[in-house]
Amino acid sequence: KGYDISWSAYSSIHHNFSLPFTEIKELTEIVKNYDTIMLHNCERKYINVLRHICYNKNFQNKTKYNFLKKIRIITIIKPKRFLDNLTALFVTIFALFYFSISKRKVGIWTGGADKIFPGTDCGFRLVNLYQALRKNKIKFVEFAANNSWKNTFKNLLFRKRFVIYYPSIKYFLSFLIPTQEKLKPKSIYNSVLLSYDFHNQLLLRVIPILEFIYKLIGLKTLWIRAFGLGNAELVIAAKSAGIKTVGMMHGLSTKINTVNEFVPAYSSPKKLGSDVYGVWSPWFEQYFKKNSKIIALESIKYAGLLRPYILQRKISGKEEKREDKIRLFLISEPLTDPKEIVPYFKPLTKDKRFSLAIKLRPIPPDRFYNNLIKIFPEAKFWPKYKGNIFEDGKNADVFIGSYSTAVLEASLLGKLSILVKTKKWGDYFEMKDWIPEAKILVEKPEEIVENILTRLQQENKLKTAEKIKTRFFGENKNGAAWAVKELTL
Image (cartoon, rainbow, N blue to C red; front, side, top):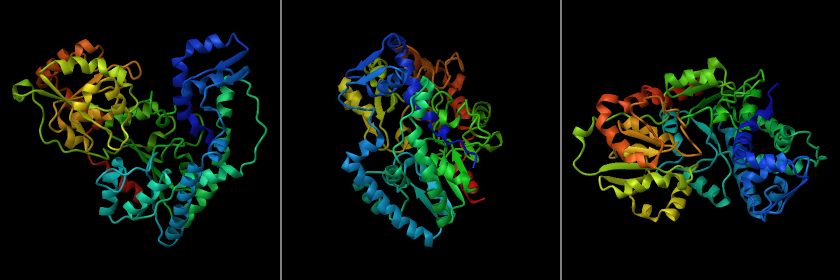
């Protein structure tokens, strides 16, 4: 119906081709001078890049794990994946039978992983939304990503309700797509796009099935968070069926990383972004209207936070500091290499004026922490927290990290945020020159101790916590109420 499904791969191309390409750009120039390219023990992310760069050469990957095998072959030779999908499809069939009788007008995409936050029956980002829906007695159906067969049954018993595991449908459809003659790419750009041809063929086949499912269960609105590769079939099927899609920021979005929410090159007349998209602050409303091309301007609304927090007290400088140590709250960031962070930790651990604790990811495994303790064993002895960010961080003085939303959420508690510069993330939130006298971004490890002490002394004057809160989190209003309203209009 006029929707260009190929845009669904934009974010994947950005992260799996464009970014790794920048890391080996010099190497890509060198290989152009050779006719035969052989790879040995190459990292997976670079194999994909070099395969496209060498589209017109004799390219041979000798790495033991052949990352380039077709998806269908991999799934066939992996019985566990087949069993996982079979179990998910089994649950989905029963769910469809149930929801065909007990209709659901509201659908919720639960995200890229079917994980349940401890103490709840859903992912940690959805707790407030679910509470608001239930408070308003609104029944809903969940569309979840696949899980292992054991966790599928475990989550089913834990939730005590059916969910639709939509990827399982796509998985079995993949066996029905006839093998086509492989087209020879004519350029690097063409090679990259052709690598998503099988994915596009699957989308074309699964979308009509999802449209039928929506009609079967009586769906009227769908919560999608944001359009992307992981939910493309759900979103396009909803738009094709005339079902309203509602999205909302789930982290501090930036045009350089969460590119699926912006897609600056988007040129199709029909927008694939949410029909209504909620942002966290008036500043973000203008930011999205200026930079996002995949969402219509009139669709972008100031909604508030899905996880708002009521401030209990504000930090007011060194004169009100406790007489004990300055408490630092380090944020575990799964996409950061601990090797880039450890140099900032070392001077802090040696200074007796500080005590350190670490906030782990709410749902294990925590790759950052596991890698951190391998190269910096001292971190094993830090207090560890893995619950609610606000409860865990309420007794801290300073939050430290490189790109995580949690670092700036310190402002909702009236605490200080320290961002450390890494090669990967740089000045991720564009904070370097925002409040020059505050130096929210620390660029050198040897500067971090003095930075923290100075910031604490000057906070009464600079009010960085209040400024960060206003810019990124607005009035800290309840976005779950906005979401419920949009889902039931």
